[in-house]
Image 1 (cartoon, rainbow, N blue to C red):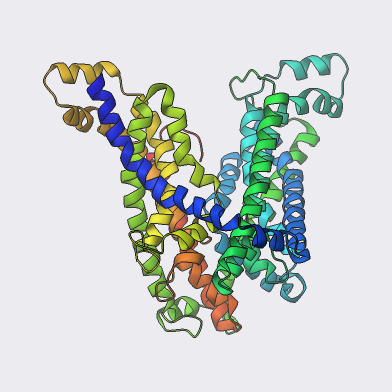
Image 2: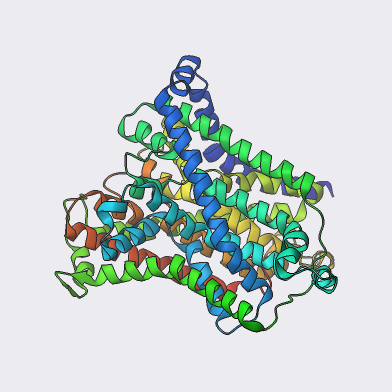
Length: 531
Protein backbone atom coordinates (compact mmCIF):
# COMPACT_ATOMS: atom_id res chain seq x y z
CA UNK A 1 0.00 0.00 0.00
CA UNK A 2 2.83 2.37 0.86
CA UNK A 3 4.61 1.73 -2.45
CA UNK A 4 1.31 2.25 -4.27
CA UNK A 5 0.90 5.68 -2.67
CA UNK A 6 4.48 6.64 -3.46
CA UNK A 7 3.96 5.72 -7.12
CA UNK A 8 0.77 7.81 -7.23
CA UNK A 9 2.55 10.77 -5.65
CA UNK A 10 5.41 10.51 -8.12
CA UNK A 11 2.97 10.29 -11.02
CA UNK A 12 0.90 13.20 -9.69
CA UNK A 13 3.96 15.41 -9.45
CA UNK A 14 4.31 15.65 -13.23
CA UNK A 15 0.87 17.10 -14.13
CA UNK A 16 0.74 19.13 -10.90
CA UNK A 17 4.09 20.75 -11.72
CA UNK A 18 2.90 21.51 -15.26
CA UNK A 19 -0.26 23.30 -14.09
CA UNK A 20 1.60 24.99 -11.25
CA UNK A 21 4.34 26.40 -13.48
CA UNK A 22 2.28 27.35 -16.53
CA UNK A 23 -1.04 28.38 -14.94
CA UNK A 24 -0.89 29.06 -11.20
CA UNK A 25 2.42 30.93 -11.33
CA UNK A 26 1.30 33.23 -14.20
CA UNK A 27 -2.02 33.81 -12.43
CA UNK A 28 -0.17 34.75 -9.25
CA UNK A 29 1.98 37.13 -11.29
CA UNK A 30 -1.13 38.87 -12.61
CA UNK A 31 -2.45 39.23 -9.06
CA UNK A 32 0.89 40.61 -7.84
CA UNK A 33 0.97 43.25 -10.57
CA UNK A 34 -2.73 44.03 -10.15
CA UNK A 35 -2.48 44.67 -6.41
CA UNK A 36 -0.31 47.76 -6.85
CA UNK A 37 -2.27 50.28 -4.76
CA UNK A 38 -1.71 53.41 -6.83
CA UNK A 39 -2.32 51.74 -10.19
CA UNK A 40 -5.34 49.90 -8.83
CA UNK A 41 -6.92 53.07 -7.49
CA UNK A 42 -6.16 55.02 -10.64
CA UNK A 43 -7.47 52.29 -12.97
CA UNK A 44 -10.59 51.30 -11.04
CA UNK A 45 -11.46 54.93 -10.31
CA UNK A 46 -11.13 56.00 -13.94
CA UNK A 47 -14.51 56.90 -15.53
CA UNK A 48 -13.37 55.12 -18.70
CA UNK A 49 -13.00 51.87 -16.73
CA UNK A 50 -16.48 52.34 -15.28
CA UNK A 51 -17.84 52.73 -18.81
CA UNK A 52 -16.03 49.59 -20.01
CA UNK A 53 -17.30 47.61 -17.01
CA UNK A 54 -20.84 48.89 -17.55
CA UNK A 55 -20.81 47.83 -21.20
CA UNK A 56 -19.27 44.44 -20.33
CA UNK A 57 -22.07 43.69 -17.86
CA UNK A 58 -24.83 45.16 -20.05
CA UNK A 59 -23.96 43.23 -23.20
CA UNK A 60 -23.51 40.01 -21.20
CA UNK A 61 -26.94 40.36 -19.56
CA UNK A 62 -28.67 41.33 -22.82
CA UNK A 63 -27.04 38.49 -24.75
CA UNK A 64 -27.93 35.96 -22.05
CA UNK A 65 -31.54 37.13 -21.79
CA UNK A 66 -32.17 36.99 -25.54
CA UNK A 67 -30.43 33.61 -25.78
CA UNK A 68 -32.66 32.25 -23.00
CA UNK A 69 -35.78 33.61 -24.68
CA UNK A 70 -34.96 31.97 -28.03
CA UNK A 71 -33.54 28.67 -26.73
CA UNK A 72 -36.23 27.58 -24.27
CA UNK A 73 -38.87 26.83 -26.97
CA UNK A 74 -36.31 24.70 -28.80
CA UNK A 75 -35.48 22.92 -25.53
CA UNK A 76 -39.18 22.19 -25.04
CA UNK A 77 -39.56 20.72 -28.53
CA UNK A 78 -36.46 18.53 -28.14
CA UNK A 79 -37.54 17.38 -24.68
CA UNK A 80 -41.19 16.50 -25.19
CA UNK A 81 -41.78 15.98 -28.92
CA UNK A 82 -40.55 13.30 -31.29
CA UNK A 83 -40.62 14.50 -34.88
CA UNK A 84 -38.96 13.98 -38.24
CA UNK A 85 -35.72 15.94 -38.40
CA UNK A 86 -35.15 15.83 -34.62
CA UNK A 87 -31.73 14.22 -35.01
CA UNK A 88 -30.79 16.75 -37.69
CA UNK A 89 -31.80 19.58 -35.35
CA UNK A 90 -29.65 18.08 -32.59
CA UNK A 91 -26.74 17.85 -35.02
CA UNK A 92 -27.23 21.49 -36.05
CA UNK A 93 -27.04 22.52 -32.41
CA UNK A 94 -23.55 20.98 -32.16
CA UNK A 95 -22.17 23.48 -34.72
CA UNK A 96 -21.65 26.43 -32.32
CA UNK A 97 -19.72 24.20 -29.89
CA UNK A 98 -16.96 23.60 -32.41
CA UNK A 99 -16.63 27.02 -34.03
CA UNK A 100 -13.75 29.30 -32.99
CA UNK A 101 -14.69 32.86 -32.07
CA UNK A 102 -13.01 34.38 -35.12
CA UNK A 103 -15.03 32.11 -37.41
CA UNK A 104 -18.25 33.20 -35.70
CA UNK A 105 -17.29 36.84 -36.10
CA UNK A 106 -16.38 36.24 -39.75
CA UNK A 107 -19.69 34.46 -40.29
CA UNK A 108 -21.64 37.45 -39.01
CA UNK A 109 -19.55 39.87 -41.04
CA UNK A 110 -20.31 37.81 -44.14
CA UNK A 111 -24.01 37.74 -43.24
CA UNK A 112 -24.07 41.52 -42.83
CA UNK A 113 -22.20 41.89 -46.11
CA UNK A 114 -24.66 39.61 -47.94
CA UNK A 115 -27.66 41.55 -46.56
CA UNK A 116 -26.07 44.95 -47.19
CA UNK A 117 -26.07 45.81 -43.48
CA UNK A 118 -22.35 46.17 -42.82
CA UNK A 119 -22.33 49.96 -42.48
CA UNK A 120 -25.37 49.91 -40.19
CA UNK A 121 -24.59 47.02 -37.84
CA UNK A 122 -20.81 46.47 -37.75
CA UNK A 123 -19.23 47.78 -34.54
CA UNK A 124 -22.61 47.87 -32.81
CA UNK A 125 -23.95 46.21 -29.69
CA UNK A 126 -26.57 44.39 -31.78
CA UNK A 127 -23.91 42.59 -33.80
CA UNK A 128 -22.23 41.44 -30.58
CA UNK A 129 -25.49 40.22 -29.06
CA UNK A 130 -26.43 38.33 -32.23
CA UNK A 131 -23.06 36.54 -32.30
CA UNK A 132 -23.32 35.64 -28.61
CA UNK A 133 -26.79 34.21 -29.14
CA UNK A 134 -25.40 32.09 -31.98
CA UNK A 135 -22.61 30.83 -29.75
CA UNK A 136 -24.65 30.03 -26.66
CA UNK A 137 -28.08 29.13 -28.05
CA UNK A 138 -27.20 25.44 -28.04
CA UNK A 139 -25.87 25.52 -24.45
CA UNK A 140 -29.35 26.28 -23.13
CA UNK A 141 -31.30 24.31 -25.73
CA UNK A 142 -29.31 21.09 -25.26
CA UNK A 143 -28.70 21.18 -21.50
CA UNK A 144 -32.20 22.28 -20.48
CA UNK A 145 -33.74 20.00 -23.13
CA UNK A 146 -31.80 16.98 -21.86
CA UNK A 147 -32.88 17.65 -18.27
CA UNK A 148 -36.47 18.36 -19.31
CA UNK A 149 -36.76 15.14 -21.32
CA UNK A 150 -36.05 13.06 -18.20
CA UNK A 151 -38.54 14.76 -15.89
CA UNK A 152 -41.39 12.59 -14.65
CA UNK A 153 -44.57 13.65 -16.49
CA UNK A 154 -46.93 12.45 -13.73
CA UNK A 155 -47.18 15.86 -11.94
CA UNK A 156 -48.07 17.58 -15.22
CA UNK A 157 -50.69 14.97 -16.05
CA UNK A 158 -52.20 15.34 -12.56
CA UNK A 159 -52.42 19.11 -13.01
CA UNK A 160 -54.19 18.70 -16.34
CA UNK A 161 -56.66 16.22 -14.82
CA UNK A 162 -57.42 18.75 -12.08
CA UNK A 163 -58.36 21.32 -14.72
CA UNK A 164 -55.19 23.37 -15.25
CA UNK A 165 -54.57 24.57 -18.78
CA UNK A 166 -51.28 24.17 -20.66
CA UNK A 167 -49.99 27.61 -19.69
CA UNK A 168 -50.85 27.23 -16.00
CA UNK A 169 -49.43 23.71 -15.91
CA UNK A 170 -46.17 24.98 -17.36
CA UNK A 171 -45.84 28.01 -15.06
CA UNK A 172 -46.85 26.26 -11.83
CA UNK A 173 -45.62 22.68 -12.31
CA UNK A 174 -43.03 22.38 -15.09
CA UNK A 175 -41.11 25.66 -14.83
CA UNK A 176 -40.29 25.39 -11.09
CA UNK A 177 -38.83 21.93 -11.70
CA UNK A 178 -36.73 23.27 -14.59
CA UNK A 179 -35.24 26.14 -12.58
CA UNK A 180 -32.03 24.26 -11.53
CA UNK A 181 -31.18 23.35 -15.14
CA UNK A 182 -32.09 26.82 -16.45
CA UNK A 183 -30.06 28.51 -13.71
CA UNK A 184 -27.00 26.34 -14.34
CA UNK A 185 -26.99 26.85 -18.10
CA UNK A 186 -27.78 30.57 -17.77
CA UNK A 187 -24.81 31.04 -15.42
CA UNK A 188 -22.52 29.33 -17.93
CA UNK A 189 -23.81 31.48 -20.79
CA UNK A 190 -23.49 34.66 -18.71
CA UNK A 191 -19.89 33.77 -17.89
CA UNK A 192 -19.11 33.07 -21.56
CA UNK A 193 -20.61 36.40 -22.61
CA UNK A 194 -18.84 38.30 -19.84
CA UNK A 195 -15.42 36.93 -20.86
CA UNK A 196 -16.00 37.08 -24.63
CA UNK A 197 -12.96 38.31 -26.55
CA UNK A 198 -12.80 37.49 -30.27
CA UNK A 199 -16.40 38.43 -31.00
CA UNK A 200 -16.05 41.77 -29.19
CA UNK A 201 -12.72 42.58 -30.79
CA UNK A 202 -13.89 41.94 -34.37
CA UNK A 203 -17.58 42.87 -34.30
CA UNK A 204 -17.43 45.55 -31.60
CA UNK A 205 -14.30 47.37 -32.65
CA UNK A 206 -12.58 50.01 -30.50
CA UNK A 207 -15.88 51.76 -29.71
CA UNK A 208 -17.37 48.69 -27.99
CA UNK A 209 -14.67 47.73 -25.50
CA UNK A 210 -15.03 45.18 -22.70
CA UNK A 211 -12.66 44.21 -19.90
CA UNK A 212 -11.22 41.41 -22.06
CA UNK A 213 -10.42 43.62 -25.05
CA UNK A 214 -9.04 46.40 -22.82
CA UNK A 215 -6.68 43.95 -21.12
CA UNK A 216 -5.40 42.98 -24.57
CA UNK A 217 -5.05 46.59 -25.75
CA UNK A 218 -3.17 47.76 -22.66
CA UNK A 219 -0.89 44.70 -22.60
CA UNK A 220 -0.15 44.23 -26.33
CA UNK A 221 -0.68 47.60 -27.99
CA UNK A 222 0.19 50.04 -25.20
CA UNK A 223 2.62 47.86 -23.19
CA UNK A 224 1.10 49.06 -19.89
CA UNK A 225 1.21 45.78 -18.00
CA UNK A 226 0.25 47.24 -14.60
CA UNK A 227 -2.98 48.73 -15.96
CA UNK A 228 -3.77 45.50 -17.80
CA UNK A 229 -3.16 43.52 -14.60
CA UNK A 230 -5.51 45.84 -12.66
CA UNK A 231 -8.22 45.27 -15.28
CA UNK A 232 -7.57 41.50 -15.14
CA UNK A 233 -7.99 41.60 -11.37
CA UNK A 234 -11.28 43.47 -11.77
CA UNK A 235 -12.47 40.83 -14.22
CA UNK A 236 -11.47 38.03 -11.84
CA UNK A 237 -13.53 39.66 -9.09
CA UNK A 238 -16.65 39.72 -11.26
CA UNK A 239 -16.09 36.17 -12.52
CA UNK A 240 -15.80 34.94 -8.92
CA UNK A 241 -18.98 36.83 -8.04
CA UNK A 242 -20.89 35.19 -10.93
CA UNK A 243 -19.61 31.70 -10.10
CA UNK A 244 -20.17 32.06 -6.35
CA UNK A 245 -23.65 33.54 -6.73
CA UNK A 246 -24.65 30.76 -9.13
CA UNK A 247 -23.31 28.04 -6.84
CA UNK A 248 -24.95 29.44 -3.70
CA UNK A 249 -28.28 30.00 -5.43
CA UNK A 250 -28.37 26.47 -6.85
CA UNK A 251 -27.58 24.97 -3.44
CA UNK A 252 -30.34 26.93 -1.76
CA UNK A 253 -33.02 26.69 -4.43
CA UNK A 254 -32.13 23.49 -6.24
CA UNK A 255 -34.48 20.65 -5.32
CA UNK A 256 -33.46 17.07 -6.12
CA UNK A 257 -35.62 15.87 -9.00
CA UNK A 258 -36.39 12.31 -9.98
CA UNK A 259 -35.08 11.72 -13.49
CA UNK A 260 -36.28 8.84 -15.59
CA UNK A 261 -36.29 7.70 -19.18
CA UNK A 262 -36.84 10.06 -22.10
CA UNK A 263 -40.53 10.88 -22.51
CA UNK A 264 -40.81 12.37 -26.01
CA UNK A 265 -43.98 11.68 -28.00
CA UNK A 266 -45.22 12.52 -31.47
CA UNK A 267 -46.75 16.02 -31.75
CA UNK A 268 -50.53 16.11 -31.43
CA UNK A 269 -52.65 19.00 -32.52
CA UNK A 270 -51.89 22.23 -34.33
CA UNK A 271 -50.25 23.87 -31.31
CA UNK A 272 -47.55 21.21 -30.93
CA UNK A 273 -46.90 21.07 -34.68
CA UNK A 274 -46.51 24.86 -34.65
CA UNK A 275 -44.08 24.54 -31.74
CA UNK A 276 -41.95 22.09 -33.73
CA UNK A 277 -41.96 24.38 -36.76
CA UNK A 278 -41.04 27.40 -34.65
CA UNK A 279 -38.18 25.53 -32.95
CA UNK A 280 -36.74 24.34 -36.27
CA UNK A 281 -37.05 27.76 -37.92
CA UNK A 282 -35.41 29.47 -34.94
CA UNK A 283 -32.48 27.06 -35.02
CA UNK A 284 -32.05 27.49 -38.78
CA UNK A 285 -32.13 31.29 -38.54
CA UNK A 286 -29.89 31.54 -35.47
CA UNK A 287 -27.33 28.90 -36.49
CA UNK A 288 -27.78 28.04 -40.16
CA UNK A 289 -27.88 31.50 -41.73
CA UNK A 290 -24.48 32.79 -40.51
CA UNK A 291 -22.70 29.55 -41.50
CA UNK A 292 -24.38 29.52 -44.93
CA UNK A 293 -23.48 33.19 -45.46
CA UNK A 294 -19.85 32.44 -44.54
CA UNK A 295 -19.56 29.68 -47.14
CA UNK A 296 -21.35 31.78 -49.78
CA UNK A 297 -19.11 34.80 -49.20
CA UNK A 298 -15.93 32.70 -49.36
CA UNK A 299 -16.88 31.68 -52.90
CA UNK A 300 -17.84 35.17 -54.10
CA UNK A 301 -15.19 36.97 -56.14
CA UNK A 302 -15.40 39.81 -58.69
CA UNK A 303 -19.17 39.62 -59.02
CA UNK A 304 -19.29 35.84 -59.51
CA UNK A 305 -18.58 32.59 -57.71
CA UNK A 306 -15.28 30.72 -57.88
CA UNK A 307 -12.48 29.33 -55.72
CA UNK A 308 -10.31 32.39 -56.39
CA UNK A 309 -10.28 33.47 -52.72
CA UNK A 310 -8.91 30.05 -51.79
CA UNK A 311 -6.32 30.17 -54.57
CA UNK A 312 -5.05 33.56 -53.36
CA UNK A 313 -4.27 32.12 -49.93
CA UNK A 314 -0.97 30.80 -51.20
CA UNK A 315 0.21 34.28 -52.21
CA UNK A 316 1.58 36.95 -49.94
CA UNK A 317 -0.63 39.66 -48.46
CA UNK A 318 -0.04 43.15 -47.08
CA UNK A 319 -1.94 42.21 -43.92
CA UNK A 320 0.76 39.71 -42.81
CA UNK A 321 4.45 39.06 -43.27
CA UNK A 322 3.71 35.46 -44.30
CA UNK A 323 1.10 33.87 -46.54
CA UNK A 324 -2.21 32.68 -45.05
CA UNK A 325 -1.32 29.09 -45.93
CA UNK A 326 1.81 29.44 -43.78
CA UNK A 327 -0.48 30.40 -40.89
CA UNK A 328 -2.47 27.22 -41.59
CA UNK A 329 0.73 25.19 -41.30
CA UNK A 330 1.60 26.96 -38.04
CA UNK A 331 -1.83 26.16 -36.58
CA UNK A 332 -1.59 22.49 -37.46
CA UNK A 333 1.92 22.25 -36.02
CA UNK A 334 0.95 24.03 -32.80
CA UNK A 335 -2.19 21.91 -32.49
CA UNK A 336 -0.27 18.66 -32.87
CA UNK A 337 2.28 19.72 -30.25
CA UNK A 338 -0.45 20.92 -27.88
CA UNK A 339 -2.32 17.65 -28.36
CA UNK A 340 0.80 15.61 -27.54
CA UNK A 341 1.38 17.64 -24.35
CA UNK A 342 -2.28 17.55 -23.29
CA UNK A 343 -2.49 13.82 -24.00
CA UNK A 344 0.59 12.86 -21.98
CA UNK A 345 -0.03 15.22 -19.03
CA UNK A 346 -3.77 14.56 -19.03
CA UNK A 347 -3.29 10.78 -19.10
CA UNK A 348 -0.97 10.95 -16.10
CA UNK A 349 -3.46 13.13 -14.22
CA UNK A 350 -6.34 10.81 -15.16
CA UNK A 351 -4.43 7.80 -13.84
CA UNK A 352 -3.97 9.56 -10.49
CA UNK A 353 -7.59 10.79 -10.31
CA UNK A 354 -8.97 7.33 -11.06
CA UNK A 355 -6.90 5.70 -8.28
CA UNK A 356 -6.69 8.37 -5.58
CA UNK A 357 -9.95 7.81 -3.68
CA UNK A 358 -11.23 10.75 -1.64
CA UNK A 359 -8.57 13.16 -2.90
CA UNK A 360 -9.65 12.63 -6.51
CA UNK A 361 -12.09 15.56 -6.66
CA UNK A 362 -9.60 18.09 -5.33
CA UNK A 363 -6.84 16.87 -7.64
CA UNK A 364 -9.16 16.84 -10.66
CA UNK A 365 -10.40 20.33 -9.80
CA UNK A 366 -6.84 21.65 -10.05
CA UNK A 367 -6.78 20.75 -13.75
CA UNK A 368 -10.29 21.98 -14.50
CA UNK A 369 -9.56 25.52 -13.29
CA UNK A 370 -7.77 26.61 -16.52
CA UNK A 371 -10.91 25.69 -18.46
CA UNK A 372 -12.86 28.27 -16.44
CA UNK A 373 -10.27 30.99 -16.97
CA UNK A 374 -10.54 33.04 -20.14
CA UNK A 375 -7.96 32.72 -22.88
CA UNK A 376 -7.03 36.37 -22.32
CA UNK A 377 -5.99 35.63 -18.72
CA UNK A 378 -3.97 32.60 -19.82
CA UNK A 379 -2.18 34.55 -22.55
CA UNK A 380 -1.60 37.65 -20.45
CA UNK A 381 -0.30 35.57 -17.55
CA UNK A 382 2.15 33.74 -19.80
CA UNK A 383 3.29 37.02 -21.35
CA UNK A 384 3.79 38.59 -17.93
CA UNK A 385 5.39 35.71 -16.01
CA UNK A 386 7.35 33.55 -18.44
CA UNK A 387 9.93 36.12 -19.47
CA UNK A 388 12.88 35.51 -17.15
CA UNK A 389 15.29 32.60 -16.62
CA UNK A 390 14.78 29.75 -16.01
CA UNK A 391 11.30 30.24 -17.51
CA UNK A 392 12.16 32.69 -20.27
CA UNK A 393 9.72 31.37 -22.90
CA UNK A 394 8.34 34.61 -24.36
CA UNK A 395 10.31 34.11 -27.58
CA UNK A 396 10.10 30.32 -27.51
CA UNK A 397 8.12 28.38 -30.11
CA UNK A 398 6.81 26.12 -27.33
CA UNK A 399 4.90 28.82 -25.46
CA UNK A 400 1.88 28.63 -27.77
CA UNK A 401 1.33 24.83 -27.62
CA UNK A 402 2.00 24.81 -23.86
CA UNK A 403 -0.71 27.41 -23.30
CA UNK A 404 -3.10 25.61 -25.64
CA UNK A 405 -2.42 22.36 -23.77
CA UNK A 406 -3.66 23.95 -20.53
CA UNK A 407 -7.09 24.24 -22.15
CA UNK A 408 -6.92 20.74 -23.63
CA UNK A 409 -5.89 18.85 -20.49
CA UNK A 410 -9.35 19.02 -18.82
CA UNK A 411 -10.91 17.37 -21.90
CA UNK A 412 -8.39 14.53 -21.73
CA UNK A 413 -9.03 14.00 -18.02
CA UNK A 414 -12.83 14.11 -18.27
CA UNK A 415 -12.88 11.58 -21.13
CA UNK A 416 -10.23 9.18 -19.76
CA UNK A 417 -11.09 8.95 -16.05
CA UNK A 418 -14.44 7.09 -16.56
CA UNK A 419 -12.70 4.45 -18.69
CA UNK A 420 -9.97 3.94 -16.08
CA UNK A 421 -12.48 3.73 -13.24
CA UNK A 422 -14.37 1.04 -15.13
CA UNK A 423 -11.36 -1.31 -14.97
CA UNK A 424 -11.96 -3.99 -12.34
CA UNK A 425 -9.53 -3.95 -9.42
CA UNK A 426 -9.59 -7.75 -9.52
CA UNK A 427 -7.95 -7.70 -12.94
CA UNK A 428 -5.10 -5.59 -11.59
CA UNK A 429 -4.71 -7.90 -8.58
CA UNK A 430 -4.78 -11.01 -10.77
CA UNK A 431 -2.09 -9.58 -13.05
CA UNK A 432 0.06 -8.70 -10.02
CA UNK A 433 -0.37 -12.21 -8.55
CA UNK A 434 0.77 -13.69 -11.87
CA UNK A 435 4.00 -11.71 -11.59
CA UNK A 436 3.29 -8.60 -13.63
CA UNK A 437 5.13 -5.47 -12.50
CA UNK A 438 3.11 -2.28 -11.78
CA UNK A 439 4.33 -0.84 -15.08
CA UNK A 440 3.18 -3.92 -16.98
CA UNK A 441 -0.19 -3.92 -15.17
CA UNK A 442 -0.68 -0.33 -16.29
CA UNK A 443 0.39 -1.09 -19.86
CA UNK A 444 -1.66 -4.27 -20.36
CA UNK A 445 -4.67 -3.84 -18.03
CA UNK A 446 -5.37 -0.12 -17.59
CA UNK A 447 -4.16 1.43 -20.83
CA UNK A 448 -6.11 -0.57 -23.48
CA UNK A 449 -9.61 0.43 -22.24
CA UNK A 450 -8.43 3.99 -21.61
CA UNK A 451 -7.26 4.52 -25.19
CA UNK A 452 -10.76 5.14 -26.52
CA UNK A 453 -11.45 7.85 -23.95
CA UNK A 454 -7.98 9.25 -24.55
CA UNK A 455 -8.72 9.50 -28.28
CA UNK A 456 -11.81 11.59 -27.52
CA UNK A 457 -9.89 13.87 -25.18
CA UNK A 458 -6.97 14.52 -27.50
CA UNK A 459 -9.43 15.10 -30.35
CA UNK A 460 -11.04 17.89 -28.37
CA UNK A 461 -7.60 19.23 -27.41
CA UNK A 462 -6.64 19.34 -31.09
CA UNK A 463 -9.88 21.13 -32.08
CA UNK A 464 -9.56 23.65 -29.24
CA UNK A 465 -5.95 24.42 -30.14
CA UNK A 466 -6.83 25.00 -33.79
CA UNK A 467 -9.40 27.64 -32.94
CA UNK A 468 -7.86 29.25 -29.84
CA UNK A 469 -7.60 33.01 -30.24
CA UNK A 470 -7.64 34.82 -26.88
CA UNK A 471 -4.37 33.47 -25.45
CA UNK A 472 -2.67 33.26 -28.85
CA UNK A 473 -3.26 36.99 -29.46
CA UNK A 474 -0.85 37.68 -26.56
CA UNK A 475 1.93 35.16 -27.09
CA UNK A 476 2.19 34.26 -30.81
CA UNK A 477 5.13 35.82 -32.62
CA UNK A 478 4.32 38.07 -35.64
CA UNK A 479 6.32 35.78 -37.93
CA UNK A 480 4.43 32.71 -36.67
CA UNK A 481 0.72 33.63 -36.81
CA UNK A 482 -1.94 30.99 -36.36
CA UNK A 483 -5.05 30.59 -38.49
CA UNK A 484 -7.33 32.61 -36.13
CA UNK A 485 -4.72 35.40 -35.96
CA UNK A 486 -4.45 35.42 -39.76
CA UNK A 487 -8.22 35.78 -40.06
CA UNK A 488 -8.20 38.63 -37.55
CA UNK A 489 -5.42 40.48 -39.37
CA UNK A 490 -7.12 40.09 -42.74
CA UNK A 491 -10.40 41.37 -41.32
CA UNK A 492 -8.59 44.32 -39.77
CA UNK A 493 -7.39 45.55 -43.16
CA UNK A 494 -9.69 47.21 -45.73
CA UNK A 495 -10.28 45.77 -49.18
CA UNK A 496 -12.44 43.09 -50.74
CA UNK A 497 -9.40 40.87 -51.43
CA UNK A 498 -8.46 40.73 -47.74
CA UNK A 499 -12.10 40.16 -46.76
CA UNK A 500 -12.52 37.34 -49.29
CA UNK A 501 -9.36 35.60 -48.10
CA UNK A 502 -10.50 35.94 -44.47
CA UNK A 503 -13.76 34.23 -45.40
CA UNK A 504 -11.90 31.45 -47.21
CA UNK A 505 -9.60 30.89 -44.24
CA UNK A 506 -12.63 30.82 -41.93
CA UNK A 507 -14.23 28.09 -44.04
CA UNK A 508 -10.99 26.06 -43.91
CA UNK A 509 -10.81 26.45 -40.13
CA UNK A 510 -14.48 25.51 -39.84
CA UNK A 511 -13.90 22.37 -41.92
CA UNK A 512 -10.84 21.35 -39.88
CA UNK A 513 -12.54 21.76 -36.51
CA UNK A 514 -15.78 20.12 -37.68
CA UNK A 515 -13.77 17.21 -39.10
CA UNK A 516 -12.00 16.76 -35.77
CA UNK A 517 -15.32 16.67 -33.94
CA UNK A 518 -16.77 14.13 -36.39
CA UNK A 519 -13.79 11.87 -35.70
CA UNK A 520 -14.34 12.34 -31.97
CA UNK A 521 -17.89 11.03 -32.32
CA UNK A 522 -16.55 7.77 -33.75
CA UNK A 523 -14.57 7.15 -30.57
CA UNK A 524 -17.06 8.55 -28.06
CA UNK A 525 -18.30 5.98 -25.57
CA UNK A 526 -22.05 5.28 -25.72
CA UNK A 527 -23.99 7.47 -23.34
CA UNK A 528 -21.07 9.78 -22.62
CA UNK A 529 -21.92 13.41 -22.00
CA UNK A 530 -21.11 16.34 -24.22
CA UNK A 531 -18.28 18.60 -23.12
